[in-house]
Image (cartoon, rainbow, N blue to C red):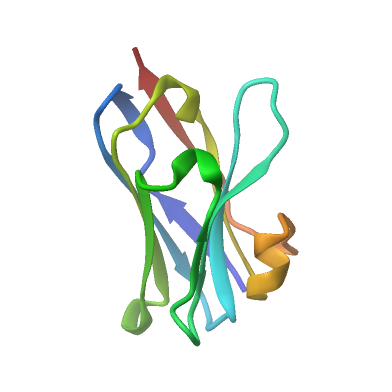
Length: 118
């Protein structure tokens, strides 16, 4: 499976951005990870195609929403109330729901940079 991510950019604190990740084929689940400056990569949100289940990391709960478009094999991450600490390279990933929620993936898209200015 090939993953194509897009939608990063520069935004002021409190603003919003939407990331998109298009998959070349159907997967069990897709998710977004991020790696901030000097930090390890962490899972942000995961979406299950079969059951519509979602899972969010605590720092983004209530601010980020992950969703999927079946017809387009595309997952979106709507990010609102952005904070400077959300600054990171965001990566989309695919795999099983449990694998992704545990913070792992075997399939990665290219990263897209999100910069939140204070």
